[in-house]
Length: 149
Image (cartoon, rainbow, N blue to C red; front, top):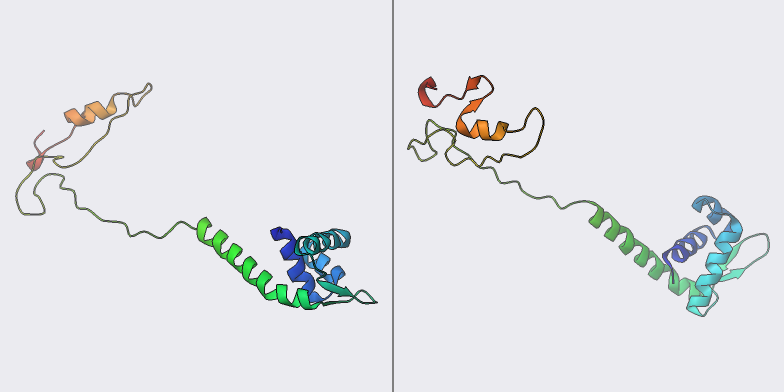
C-alpha cells in the first residue's frame, strides 16, 4: 500500500468521481484509475462500484477503508509537520562580566570569564584573535578598568 494510492482513494471517495479527483490532484484520469486499481489489488477487494455517467460509489470495503485512510494520511501529515519544524527551545541568558565588576559584587579583570576563540588563517584578519587576547587590536589598545591601557 502506497501513500499516493491512499491520497487518490481519499479524493475519489470525497468526489465520487475519478475525473474530479484527477483534476483536484493535478493528475490524469488514467493515473488515478491506475492508483485505485493498485490499491484494490493490495487490499484484495474492490473499493468502488463504477456507475454510468462517470460517477462511482464506495463498496462496503471502500466504506470501511475510508476512515482508516483519512487517519493514516492525517498521521503522515502530522509527522511531516512535526519533523519539519525544529522544537522550540528556551534560550538561556548568561551575564558575562567584561571587567569593572562581577554579578556578585567583586571585581574581575577585563575579559575574565569570557571565552574567546581565535582562528588560524591567512589574509587581512589573520592573527587578529591573538592580538585581541594580548590587548591590542590594530593601532588601538584595549583599555582595562579606569581607561588605562
